Length: 194
Image (cartoon, rainbow, N blue to C red):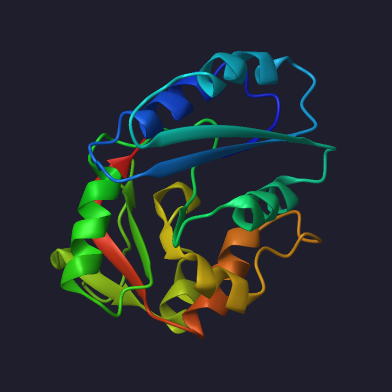
């Protein structure tokens, strides 16, 4: 979770991760990107929680933008998979479990997003399938999926070059295009993020 002046929303974002039905280990990394509103104080109580298979880590850094915050979190992560969550979004309780179930069914799935807020990919009748694939051409027609829905192998992120920290807009679309050169983008057609 990249966090910048998110004192009003960060608690809900964190709780949505800690309350996932997915029972395996989840390492939650919150990267405070130079906030000035005290949101780091909102996070502090979560650092001392003892919850089975859940760890929470706070990284404080100077403000460098969302891409630098996400890249720092990726580098600090210990897991095989990385899932993104914006500080003003929340995951539905079964988000990670449903994505991991699909990964088990589709061994070539190295990237899997979902729908968010009832939004769907509008082209090529993709929304008629329960799970579908997007390629680079598809993502050029419509940037998809939203960042907070994505679960991706860490090795794919590293091979893609991570987020371009010089970009101030469309940093996710840029990364998805580079990821799409390495693997297809699976989309689970369920609304699992708000």
